[in-house]
Length: 167
Image (tube, rainbow, N blue to C red):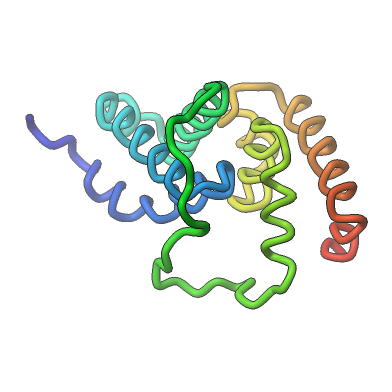
């Protein structure tokens, strides 16, 4: 099979970032790896269309979110995680050493899948509400309401620590 032009370069450049986003949404390193592999496989089969969209990242992120939401609908995933966290990718983590990181990560994992996806896209990837809505295939109003609900739940789970971190 002939290699799609630009696909290898895209995967090489973006695989790590996609893995981190998938992990943030799923909270499971192995599921995150599966989500990235599924999304990139789907992108490969449609690369001629994906590469012409003008925003390949948005298209692949949409595939990643869809794969995550689909995976969370299954009653049994067939695997149990053996560890936590992605391996070090050789990049500087600006929050390294933040003592509440695990607490926040656990709180985000308690959110419903769509709210987790909104939090990951809005705050981890710093996407606009419009870009997040496009990635999730919903309206901007839905993104706003899901974001508000997620922040409210995080405040409840963390006992006000979210307010202190945001200030």
